[in-house]
Amino acid sequence: MRTLLSIVLMSVLACAIGGCASADSDARGYLVIAGGAVEEDSREVYSAFIARLPTDAVIGVLPTASGVPETSGASAAATLRMYAGTRDVRIIDLTTKNPQDASNPDVVNQIDACQGLWFTGGDQKRIVSVFRPVVSVAGGPGGAGGTVDTPAYHAARRVLQRGGAIGGTSAGAAMMSESMILGGRSEDALLGLTRENSEETSFSVGPGMAFLPFGMTDQHFLRRGRLGRLVVALEMTGKGPGFGVEENCAVGVDLTSGSMEVLGPGAAMVVVDISGVTRDGDTRRGVRVSLLHSGDQIHGKSGTVRAAGTAVASAYAGGTASVASEAVGSENDAWSRGAVVRALAQLAREPQTPVVLKSPSFDVRFSSDRRTAFYSVAGGEPTVVDALLDIVRR
Picture 1 (cartoon, rainbow, N blue to C red):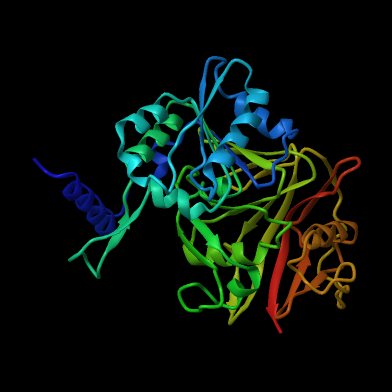
Picture 2: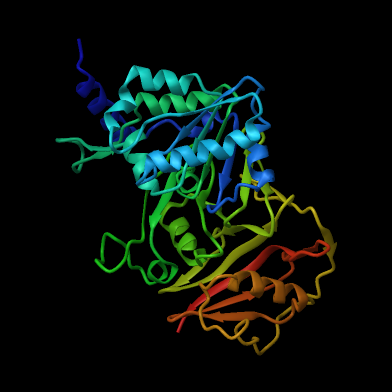
């Protein structure tokens, strides 16, 4: 009889040589990808998760990402119970303190009993290290290695295959895609500094949980200025488009149809498309950026946006102003909180005039062309679709 170790090694070697099965083959169920710092009264976010589950459903809370799992698990469970009604919310004790339990039949059965799973915040690397640990294979091609999909991981996938829901906030959002961002700043990423080639940065990418079969997710997006690092992560992985979700907001994903809807108040999600980008050293031109709000929808694979607001006639008439405007506000940092939102709002007011933000090494320039569209919502920031973004090294 083959040992468990030999089965694992054969699985890893197969992935290294021939590639593993695509997550598209069983794309069912519903995802709630929350950008972090989700407040207890964010009914729209939590209700979107709960509403997909039957009234007698079991919801499992997985504090795997947290450095204080007992505290974060209890907190997440208490919040979910506020919205759960008659549904049973349980904490599943699977963390970096007991990673071997990802193969424990009792833990696997606990996950299999759930119709919904909620992953707390923390560090996304912890989630993958428990559910899909990376194993090196001695004698593999080029020292090949790969992720091992544990029984707990397969059980989590079965939740989606049954039409259930998986949600997560912060780290629990970052891990949703096939490839995930492990950390780091926009400036470092754009300068080509990664954890692999510099001791001064934490930017890198690695395998994610592959619950989302298209694109790449990022979280705390606008508050922490992560637009630049998402652009680079998409370049490194080829896993576009990118979905940057803001704090106290989420995107709900119907995996069967591929439809994604923005949930929660304020500026919620930035969609990044690098399919038309040209490079000249550290300069990138032709990035497409869309800023979506609550109620806006996008098809995850095609990128087609259905805005909730009213279309506004674009003032674009060919060409752009010869002189770009100054940076928005008084700050000189393109990655500061709210800078991207203000820049795109200004572009919506004056589509003919590019808006330029500054970072220590780059001019970050937003402009419009015939593809760019603007939508207004009473009392809110405009939805902007397919603005042009050039990131120019000074």
